[in-house]
Image (tube, rainbow, N blue to C red; front, side, top):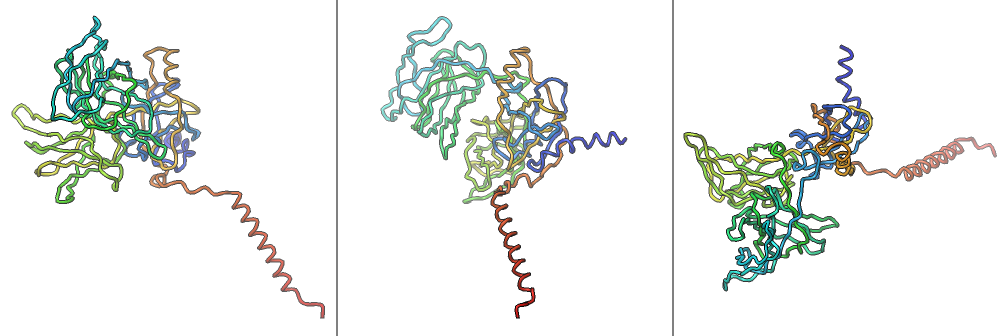
Length: 452
């Protein structure tokens, strides 16, 4: 019994060196020993503990309280390997009407496999519509034999700010086009030496040919390359949902519904649960702090639910343009609604991969305003291990245990300012010297005068 009691205290003793820098820790159980590298799927409890929006305050420590090499991998990389991507040919379409499709009249050169070699276009004639700059592109995906999960665009870095929305259409014959993404935002912004770039466009369907059409006249990137991301295996698509009940808020005589997600979840989809038969047009916004401005994330779209004898028909979830980790969310309806809707936010758990360095057991830690995970070249290391072992090799599995409190709320307070020990030492010496001199003076004053 004594041995069992000591073993139950082992996690607390082993990771005492982590200190108060993190809110919580989770002991990790290794499925198989000797794998060298392990992967941890982040759970709901971890996301609700994380403090930084980048998840840089998620780390792994060994039994000696030392951080081991670790890295965060997105849901598209469930086995800690980069998603397969293929470079695609692309062509600039001539200037047309803003936000409108252009008729491709002639394909003058096309190879036997269907790949486009040269494009000639005829623009629709519409005198009333103003001409837009040539920011539309045709992408040739005819040589791919599978669906496309997303397009990744690249352009040279410049000082020009880019914030432009595109519509993505697809076709199998370059004549009939269908919508694959109604609105995709491209961003390239710079502030205080930091750059924010959004160049990935998720697709809701695939086609042999794709075209990107700007929705407004704005500065657009000088495109240099286009890559297609291939979807991961179906078993890796592990969607989780946070079901939130909000509160109604009236601002400027308009009623909104506000929700607190309570964590740093990588939200990619949004859905609305409506009571009974219902149909309303909604817009969705989010923000990272209670005093920050709201940012549009989805909509307007019509969410509905219709009950029937064989079940209920309901609208499909909305796919966001990018992963959003904001904590606060707001739904706004175009017309008054009965009752408060429930907001459902969908995400796919991310993976932390770590190197089994030092003595086990290991622990996952999260939640800190003071400590961040050190950069580690885990992707390159894992690729090298696959080449040596097998292409199907993957890191071993590590299971998250029950959470244990470390620093708690104190870990979310900024670290105290560092003291200059040299200055403190100098002041100590000066004060000590002053006290010694004062002591001598006091002793001299107390001596009797013997000169009389």
